[in-house]
Length: 313
Image (cartoon, rainbow, N blue to C red; front, side, top):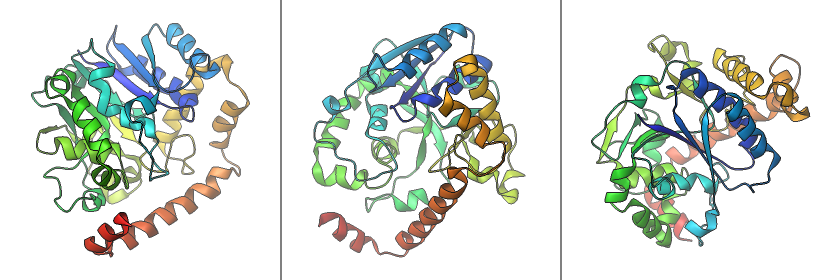
């Protein structure tokens, strides 16, 4: 059975208890959970997460890291993806005692049992859901990957990671200025993972990673069945999503149940802002989404050689 691993920085650590509540509800009994974070060990939100895990009888191990030790020359060229997301590349090194791990982004919502997924054997280093959106078209290298998969939900063979020396290869990519500058131009960890594994990936059923934006589109949502995991990709997060979707409400119910009496003012603001009334998210998130769609349209019409020229300046 696979263990479960999540990665969080200080910005998302507040929301981690909701993931614990979901794992308790839909994970196998006795499952091992890892939290990889760059937060200080005395961070009160981290302490709260440990207490909540104990209350839920979950076997949680916290691994605190210094991101810069893994990539001392790292410099983000995107404000969308934090540097700590690159730690997905080093899970084989960070979790030396694990053979198989299910990686989940913090912004995922579990809807059904994960038992089948957790007990799925894989013969490739990565098993993930293929993206059918335009993200593959934005892959920053001229040679597009054969399969472009999403890195928000991945079943990972860490034995294969170690056998293939993926940590070393990831370091080499990050230390190659031209290559790493291109690969981290938009999705960073996801583009690097596709660069390394697009020819060696097992595709998971789509039910294990559905975008919340797809579920809001009637023509797409009616084609979906038996959804197990929903991901709030991009700026749309369950803690700031302005639409009253059933998956936002589901996440809020997990979050409220997990923190219970330990809720502070910020927690209550998150919960109450989803119940109606005006909140900053209801203004800023739609504006951000409009800007993101505009940028996608502009990028799609810029020839590759111009994009490459801009990156080289």
